[in-house]
Image 1 (tube, rainbow, N blue to C red):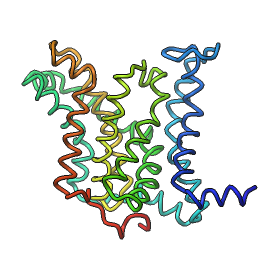
Image 2 (cartoon, helix red, strand yellow; image 1 turned 90 degrees about the vertical axis):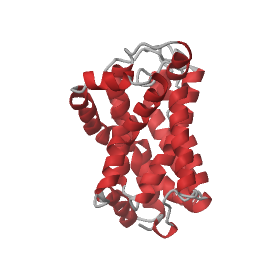
Image 3 (cartoon, rainbow, N blue to C red; image 1 turned 180 degrees about the horizontal axis):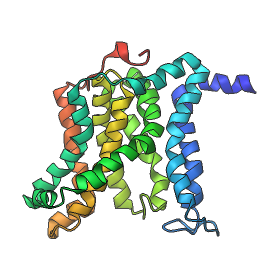
Image 4 (cartoon, rainbow, N blue to C red; image 1 turned 135 degrees about the horizontal axis):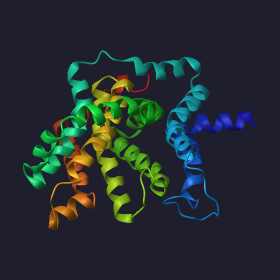
Amino acid sequence: MKQSVDSIIHYSPLGVFFVLAYAISWAFILPWSVSENSVGLGLLPYTLPNAYGIVMYVLAPLGPALAAILVTAVIEGRASVRRLLGRIKRWRIGLRWYVVALFGFMFAYIAGYVAVLGADPLRALLENWPLFFTIFLPLVLLGIFVPGIGEEPGWRGFALPRLQELYGPVRGTLVLGTLHGLWHLPGFFTPFLGPFTVDGFAAFWLTAIAATFIYTWVFNGTGGSLLIVILLHAAGNAASGFLTPVFDDLPYGGWAATIIDGGALNVIVFSSIAVLLVVLTRGRLSYRAEESIAS
């Protein structure tokens, strides 16, 4: 039995990785998604205690990292697991990458709002500047541990180098972004991402695919540093948590409300950045094949 499992993993390590990443994470999320709890589907007649939300929030993001560790251990051994996790300590990468990681997503969000609403978002930010220290920075620190360390060793550390080796940077990024975005689907039937709407999930999914091009470019440009993509992930989530309460009170309606509230603005902004990165890097997204998996 063990030999048959090992042979399956050796035959398709990427396929097994994605199955495990989904299975481990969804094992913690689905009990809420199908329950009668808030925004759940109500498919099964039970209600979980609210404390389970904390368990789900902390443990569900570990799926990709655990899947990467398990598959790597089988196909390459413990030394490769140490190399994989050792990328988290790769911090000598240049100051510019830390600036991109900490503020890239924030500037993208702000630029989108300014393009639609003019100077109002900038005035709101100046009036609420203390939130940078009371909301943004604490959320960055939290996000490094949840979900950053749980997700990035899997998505970028394990899957991305192999996808790029198989399909190249652009197609590999599209595959990863598509699967990473779908991985979030059960979360839309929990209070963390829900309530689910078709338009809302579609906008989230397309934004996730486009944003994956930024992750690929940063990961490749830093020589495969997991530390920097963990920081990028944490700061991206923190930027949303910081800017949402600031911009929600802005007066807007009409076409602006349609674009912003429906999520189309994020799709447009991050798709534009993705296209720009592909064009400026001539489709390479800073990829260097010799550094892909072995490093």
